Each structure stands twice: as structure tokens, then as C-alpha cells.
Image 1 (cartoon, rainbow, N blue to C red):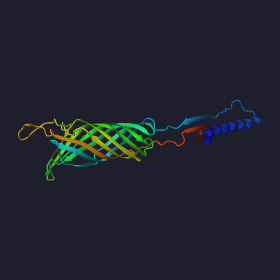
Image 2: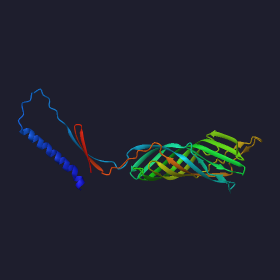
Image 3: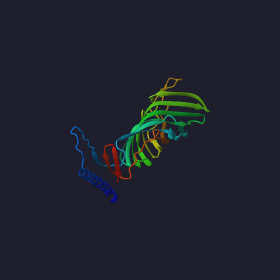
Image 4: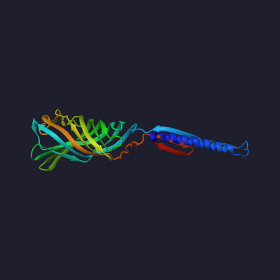
Length: 278
């Protein structure tokens, strides 16, 4: 209570000083002033306000999911297929648009480019590396210290557009064939997923993302070069991706810092300004 009465005490003190100074000036004898002399007045303003409790408006964060480790659950004709965890650093980057509704709750969307895929071993001698570049739009929420950025959880869903497919084939460790296709029919064009993770200051985060849809398009068909007949290379193949990423906000987010004292009083007189927090 004492802190809240301090601004009122300062105002009364200021007004009292002004009155005392005016009376002293009036009591003193002053020479006559020429009628052409200009008199200037100094304006005085008193402003009361309240600090916001969270960042207002929409703000942008830029970063990426640099270190991406992906796993796959693969089956062919219902039988488990051996696969290898896939690690990649490039090219995963994006921009998010954030809106905080309180200091502990916020929402975000954005646009991200990701390099996702898998490594399988159909036989002991054959190894396949298959990946797609996707353009994704996430929609999620944040819970925790979203205003200060010290620690918060996030979760949501994302829809990815697969725009480039690449495949490499190795026999006994030697690369024998590779190709890539733009907007290939070998995978679904749209790939939905769900994700969850956490982030800590100054912008590091860990995220787990799961794709429930089959990575391969089982209806894709091509022609056998030897016979010319149509074949369906992924007809009996199922693969579901899950990956873990270590992300970072490269822009170095300037998180909003909540003031310890929620109110302020500003006194302005000319160029002079004085502020009191309470």
C-alpha cells in the first residue's frame, strides 16, 4: 500500500512546491515589463499507465531443425523390413509467426522446409536411401514461459507438401544408381504429421514428429526396362516415419520481459521527464 501511495505523495509535493514558488514570486517587487516582450509557458503533463503482461501483436521467429535423426517402422508383405536410423543436418529451416494471449500461453504457425526420409536394407547386399524435401505449414500452441522464453512446451500438427524425391541404391556398399524427381508420385503429395517438444532460452529446442501416413504411394507404377510391363514397386511396402530434431532460433528471439512492477507514473515538463514504477 505504501508503494502505491508514493506517486500521489510526489504529485502533492510537486503541486505544493509550484504554489509556494508562485506566491514568493508575486510578493517580490518586479520592474515594469515592456508590452512587446513575449512570455513563454512550460507545459507540464502527468501520465499514468500499466505495463503489458505479455508480448502484444504478432512476432516472427526464424530458425531451423538442423540435427534431424529419423526412424522408420517398415513392413513388406506384412513382414518387418530392416532399416537404419537416418541422420541429416541439411536442409531444414523455417519461419514461425507467433501470437501470445498471455505470458503462459501462445499460438504459432509458419512455413518450414525439411529433409525427411529413411534408409532400408531389403537384402544383405542392397541398401536404399530415400528422402523427400517438403514445404510444411505447422499449427501449434505453447505452454510455459512463452513471454520470457526461459522454458515452455509446444505441440501441434503440420501438413507437408512433398516437392522433391531422391533415391540412392547401393550394392555391397557401392553406389550403383541414383535419381531425383520433382513432385514425384512415389510418395503422397501431402504428408500430415503431429509433433511435440520443448524449448529453452536462448532458443534451443527438442522436437519429436510422427507421420502416421505411409511414406510410399502404393499405387505408384512404372515400367520395367527389360520387359516393358507395368510394375508397382511399393505395392506391398509400408513405412511410417518418426524423427527427433534439435532446433535453434537463429534470429536470437528478443523475448518480452515482464516488469516486476505493473504500473508507472510519468511526469514531463519541457524536455525533462521523470518516471516512477509501483
